[in-house]
Structures are given as C-alpha cells and as structure tokens.
Length: 184
Image (tube, rainbow, N blue to C red; front, side, top):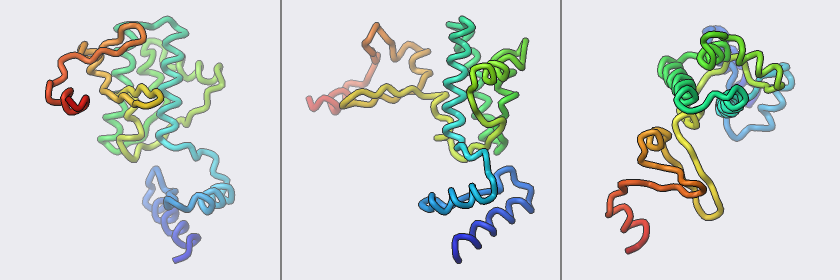
C-alpha cells in the first residue's frame, strides 16, 4: 500500500470513529509526513512530549515570577503531575484550561493569560500516547559530561537525595550497589 493510501485510511477511520487523535503518521516517513501536514494545513503538530516540556517550563517560570515557592510550589507541581497521570490512565486529553485552574484555583485563567502575555505557545489540548510523554513531572535528570543522573522527584522530597550547594548526596544506598558501581 502506498503512503498516501495508508495515510488516508488511518485519517479517515479515525475521523469516522470520532477519535480525538485521528491523524497519525508512520515513523521513519518524516518527509512524507511533513508533506501531508503542509498539504492539509495542519497547524498543531507539536508532540505531546514537547507540549509537556513547554507546560512544565512555563509553570516553573510562572511560579518563580509570582514568588510561589516551597510547599505551595510542590503542591501545584504535584497536582499537575497527578492530572497528567489521571488523564493518561483514562485515555483522555490534557487541557490547558484545566492545568491553569490547577496552577491557580482562585483565579483559573491567570496562568493561560500569563502564557499569552509571555508569548509562550502551547497546544490548548493534546493527547498522551505514552508515559514517556510526561515523565518530567515525576523525574529529574542531571546531565554533565561523563554522567547522567536520573531520579524520581519523590526521593528528593523524602530526603533520600539531597542537594548541598553544587553537590548531590544520595543517602542509604545498599552496599552491594555501591560495590558494583565502584568496582570494589
């Protein structure tokens, strides 16, 4: 089956079944995908992973600009993370308006207005296809030349991973893990 027929079949069936994500492209056919996206006038082609990153960055910036720190900041971030988890589990879209109301329940439009004011572009809604699309809400990653350190944010909240200036301290690592990592 040629690419055009396959594209038509996937799009047409999704549209007929009233699926929210009715347009899908096969991996490895980027040039063909771009051609069809341009041809049909598709304007929202940002991936869920990129939308998630933009939202996370914008929320961090908003909280910093509004001097929301500590427990209140953690509470907001946790609510957003739980929202992503719930929407993914239920197979439902992520809605920017819902996130805005989680960021500031007293004034649910402030965050979306902030996005417009700061000219931060993010999709009004998008679907998640895999957990990797929003893992950044639960995990942190520190990369430097020669190493990458990936950990669950909950470990920092629990005090198992601690920042001390420019140092990271990991507490209570089993001896056998350390022996294996350091070839002792």
